[in-house]
Length: 273
Image 1 (cartoon, helix red, strand yellow):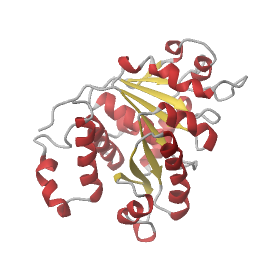
Image 2 (cartoon, helix red, strand yellow):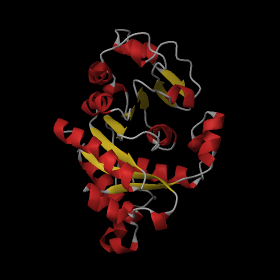
Image 3 (cartoon, rainbow, N blue to C red):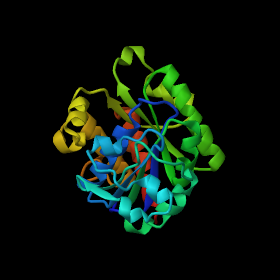
């Protein structure tokens, strides 16, 4: 059985396409890490031109990431919401800032947190400093050809910057018969799928109430899948007793994403030994 691991990782959710659910995944993963696994989490809205985490969580944005990038101490831009420390960005910035200072300003906070989660912009140029600041990235895509191929451009940036791409999260699965399956996505992306998340009407309630879905409906299918993904990046088993580790030799009995999460779990665990 794996033991709980103390670590400080900067993780980014990326895609070069809007509307794939990066912000939802960033918020829900941060919430699961903080509330289900008792991790210290800093959630940063690094969508510099079209931020929405502040709107998503109903936060006051008097001081934001933009001010921190312009010289204000980052701790002045940290707000608390649902057990998470959050750095929103300014919806209407008054002036341009040096977005490549992101890595420098968050690096000082790595010792204070177990995880720093970065939401990102779909803008190609704005994505570069996010990937540069991250220790590991996860590609977010829906299971259609247009989104997947477009999202892979983010992997090209990561490869150039030598930031590891740890996996693909397939989001907003609606009609599996008419969408890529996990084998096809892995073949096209050359990257393991670590979570498959169905489209769900409850996400509309989350947006309406301005709360993470994990806070208002923890038994929802989306919430459960996010918890499984969060357990993997904590290096913890999905179930007590490490049942998935025992079943790994019989991986044909498990879903591809479950096997990939187990491998991801081992990788995160071993990386801090």
